[in-house]
Image (cartoon, rainbow, N blue to C red; front, side, top):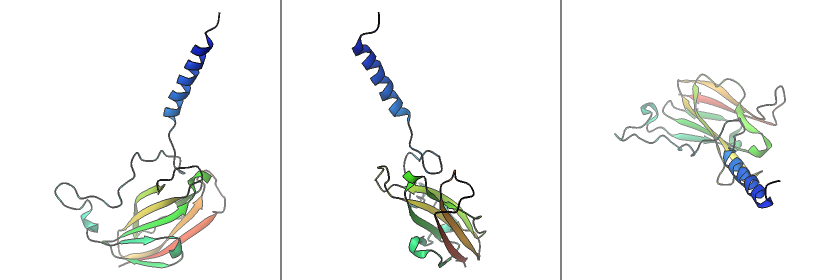
Length: 164
């Protein structure tokens, strides 16, 4: 004799509920997003000293789509934050397409959903760099799907960076 219908429905419902809790959202790079968004700037530790003394008091230069192809001048105490729009639900995201110029070091890369995590919602790819030495170079990014190889990027972005 089979199980009563109510028991089968209850077991199926419990399995469904358990499986929903096991699914984790992923970023376009295939990694699970951080549990909490990273802070905008390093917070000073309890002693009051900045987390990165070399960049204490430096300016944060924000570059957006409007700065594509332009020059940006920084000092070694500054931070460069590149903020570019994306639609992660399509699989596309902004990725560094050439090696980072030797005058910069990538310190943070994350996706800001802006509170809207609905399918197809726009987001902002944020890449933060710190200048490491005087000089210049070109930072190049490509709007691609990470699993598609040898495909022309949907969009490209570049900044000519001069560090004094």
